[in-house]
Image 1 (cartoon, one colour):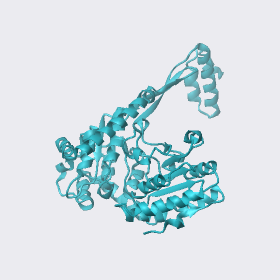
Image 2 (image 1 turned 30 degrees about the vertical axis):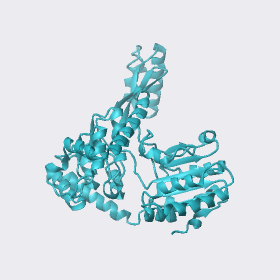
Image 3 (image 1 turned 90 degrees about the horizontal axis):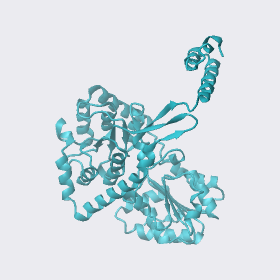
Image 4 (image 1 turned 180 degrees about the vertical axis):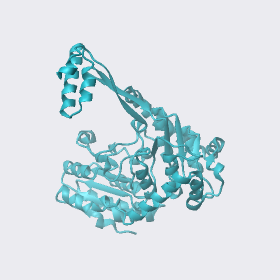
Length: 446
């Protein structure tokens, strides 16, 4: 059994805490980065140039797909049948989660799609859903039907008309749970192809897969790099990294729950990060005892132990204020507040993908069925980016619709002309001045 006592630290300052946590910030650094970028670029170039020929070749070589080109598309009946083969409890859970995700985002939809207006004048924003969106769902050991729900259902609510799903398929095809999730989400266009080749197909289009406007969903480092390289041809949601949780706890917290929540994150993969910041040294030691007890009974024990020994930390700090300060430096994907009065501290949180308020709110609830999407910014990007939501699947167009008075018209015309001439753009100035009733201003230079 792993000795986790070495993961307990008492930093003196927030910057010292950041230094202790530096392995987390370095996870995204790939020593083989250039080789990954070159390999991704080569595959994308092949798909762009050769279309379906390259798509099928890579699906066979890299995914282990055994069919022919027409077999890449999954029949709607196959997805329905996959749903029917699941245990009734699982079917009910998928539908329950889908309904909660849908309900949560429906409550946001009216405000998001309403756009906005401003004064003076009549200006505003037109908000429209994207026409066609691609959803990438990992396969293999990281096959998560919940990711289908957390992306496709939100896109549906946003009003996206065409949703295409892709997921790598080995000899056995896409796992039935993922096909069932596509069925529950109402997605009818699904292809048995993954990896860089599927990102290229959605970005550039092939004879089999038509190009999309945006690609969302997590993947391995090759998929992440492919999304980075096709950005500009299409939009993307984010560059997702390993998952992470940061928990802030005071003396009111339960050591067994804290340990359970850390292990829930650590079992994802060896790159996952679980950080606990406590205000009581005794609580930190109690959590270590619970971690060592609980991990011994975990089916994915080896993965969880490796994650904790590399990227798991327990920090002891003098106050909740200091804990929140450290959390904002980390900008975690998930932030849990196991505090006596968690609402009191919510206003101090600036950087987090999702906040779980109170010890009752396990991060696992957010992974599956609480409502908001679990596709969240990672690797500190919560400092500047947001979770997948209705806004992810819409675009905004600025609206300039008229003047509220003749005085406003004159003021705008004259200011425009002055600024245009300042930049040496006389044509702009004359275009604006043409809107004045006093046409002579064009020639006079007023």
